[in-house]
Image (cartoon, rainbow, N blue to C red; front, top):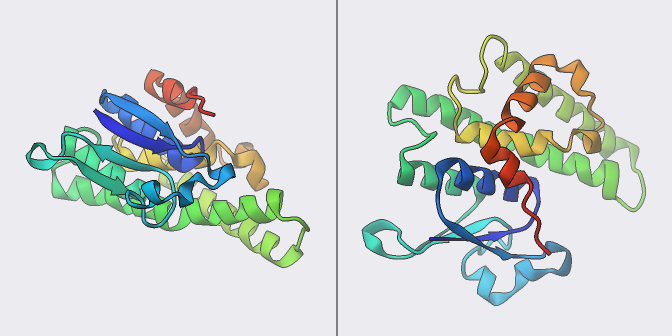
Length: 206
């Protein structure tokens, strides 16, 4: 059994998608980031960066419990644990890791800043809004190019796709028209047709 400390954000969705795709048993412990639950001492012992998601695997290495924070690290851990969607072949693994790091280091953070300045900032400030919208468009262009001639970002379906998809699903917050990125649009349609993805995205917590 895996304990998932979760809220319904793109980073949270990454892990529910992985858990559903990998067929792992899990239970959700809601961390309401709107009420600052992420700063509670019990959660900080699991996630010292006070961010969701985090997991505790009750049956980790050597049968002992292990906690993991940071979504990319969790995806890699679950991929190693199950042997699913994270290839053992080094060349294939590097391809997956490149795109996973592209997401955790760029696609997620830049789109997150776009969300903040485009949707949530108390006043619209032109310079940062334009900067992050433009960077978002550049990253979508990179992804669109990568998807030409292949169904998934690293060739076969992987934890990299699980990381990327949830951020695209908020494209309307990002001033993005998916029709401008036809291969990304097809990619979203392909991934959201998967039953495990549909189940993961349907999870509601309060």
